[in-house]
Each structure stands twice: as C-alpha cells, then as structure tokens.
Image 1 (spheres, each protein chain N blue to C red):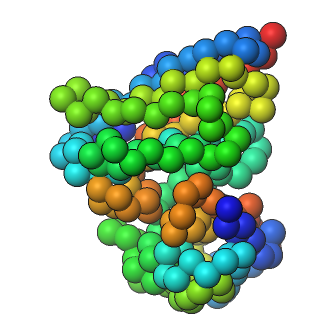
Image 2: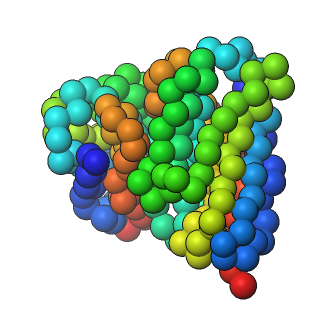
Image 3: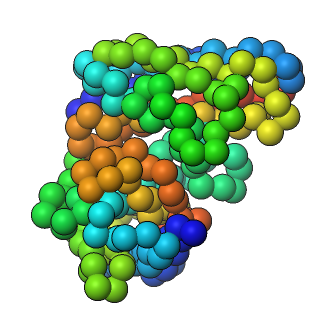
Length: 120
Length: 107
C-alpha cells in the first residue's frame, strides 16, 4: 500500500525557515516523480515544486523560486522541501504527492497534508 | 505559465443528474489534462489523467474528454458521494497549474 506521511510543519515567523519531510513507503521511490502541492485556507490548489525520479530535474512555482528547495533522499525514501524567507502568503496545507512515473506529473497518491502557518 | 480556467464555479444538481464540468487552458496542452475530486478536510483524489484515462478504482460514471485547450469532465449520474469540489490541472509544463475548482453541490 502506498503511503505518504508529511512532517515538519508548524508556526513560523515571517522571514523564518522550515523544512518539510515526506516519508514514502509501499512503492519503488526512485521510479516516481514527487511533488509538493499547497492549499491556502479556503482556496484552491497550487503546484509548489516537483522533482523527477532521478533527482536531476527540479521545478518550482514562480511564487517560491529562489526561496524553496526540493530534494529527495532515495535510500531513506524521503522527500524534502526546504522553505526559507517565509511570507504570510505561504500559509497553507502542504501536500506531498506522487507522480505517475519518473517524469510524469499526474498525482495519483497524496499525503494527508501538513499545515504551515507564517505569522508573527 | 499555462493558465487553467474552470466553469462554472458552482453546479447545483440533484442525485441522479448528469454533471458537465469544463476546463480551459490558455495554451495547447495536448492531452495532458488531469481531474481531481476533493472533499472537505481530505486530500485531492485523482479521477482522470491525460484527458480521458480513468485512474484505478474510479467508477465508470466518471469520464473525461477533450484535447488542446478545451476539456470536459462528465459524471453520468450523480451519486450522493460525488458532491465535492473538482479541480483540473495541466501537466504539460511546470509550473503545474490548477483551475480554481468547480463545486458540485446538492440542489
């Protein structure tokens, strides 16, 4: 059974940093692209960042480019999102999601989501 | 960036009705259009990928069509559990972009 479990969220002050983790199990981690998608309270979905199965291709929304860094640790089956210089508008539930193949970004499996709140 | 626009914002229907949801991309995305369902407090659920391919375990009453810039999700006969918000997403290019959602509510 595919499972994705996010951790690392919480309350942080504007300008601060946070690192999200997503522990993956039940599939061959190296064979799938992974993505972070966020949803601000009461709003729609936003694709934040993605990384190909081989870890070489990385992609970002314009709103986070230069502030967020996605990475993956294949031996640990874990996806990360390092978030720096956080802003109030980064407040959202962050979902980890698995792609359909090594470079395929339809999202067939999702974690339960983790809340990040940026506030003083 | 590919802008994705959904219509209508809200669809008020009764169980047993047919639901037709639209999604338009600002650029040609070929068949790289995906549909999700989201219920309150839950993560999105993949319904349809690449315009018309049903995801594993998705009932046959859900179908997708379209190519290029215009796409449609059809729910043939609404079941009580189908009342939810539906999002489309293009996967041709990064950034991945989603529509703003269509809420299917009980009339």
